[in-house]
Length: 84
Image (cartoon, rainbow, N blue to C red; front, side):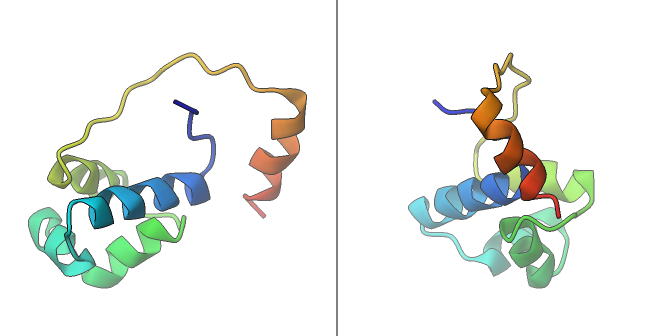
């Protein structure tokens, strides 16, 4: 499994997990206690509150883990370029 190294990739993964479970952004938002637009922002890689992020992950039956990630030199440009 490839580590997620930037917000956009994280948002893409959350969207894929949500869709794989047949859930809507509204469904996730209701469980987290936020607006649907906030979940859309999360999926777009925008900055959202940490509690929202963790709640969305949990609502989808997932969890986060901190793992060692060896970043290749080529990946550094991708990581920092996506933060612009």
